[in-house]
Image 1 (cartoon, rainbow, N blue to C red):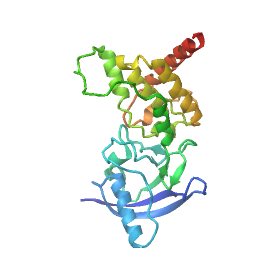
Image 2 (image 1 turned 90 degrees about the vertical axis):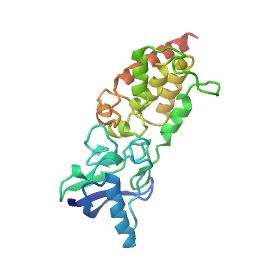
Image 3 (image 1 turned 90 degrees about the horizontal axis):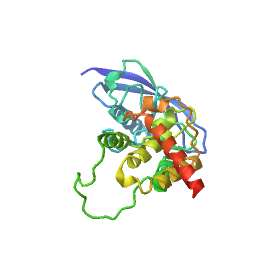
Image 4 (image 1 turned 45 degrees about the vertical axis):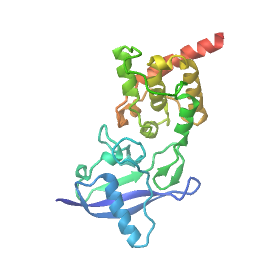
Length: 253
């Protein structure tokens, strides 16, 4: 099995209030079959054996579902590879002797906890503001009990693929969360179950997004380019239409 020797430039920072720095590490004898996170595991194992502070980073499922492994690799959230998260990136994509720059996601709304770990609880608060439907709990109804047009079902399904990783925010020069918010609102606003609270949901989520300090969308489409689930920016257009309609109805009422 081919082995790689790499040079890592890693962002180290004690907390959100401290000054960060770039530190250099050697990643020696890394299997090309290893994932990117496994490579960091190998480096950390050696650092711990040398009584040095390991590199702190977020991870959970390691299969592209949870959205925790959020880091910027060579200046691109989740790396330049399309449609994958950091944990799905494998070392065969790199060359022997290559220098890799690893940094956390950059946004005022994502303060650094330590090293590559950022606090993305602002996303949670946006969901709490309106990313749900109010319904009685109980057994799930039959899938065909409520007819849904195929186009709406497909759009809702695509939007629901969002894993809330925050790559869209990190890639945007304005640190806008519009792709995330639009995906979370759109997958409910497309369905019959989400129609009752559509206006209140849209208004609450957008206003909470503004309150969290995210920037405005200026149609750069960087979010769409780096999204690991390849969610379309068309959902942003729908959110804008829904927001304008909800604002108009709120003003009239």
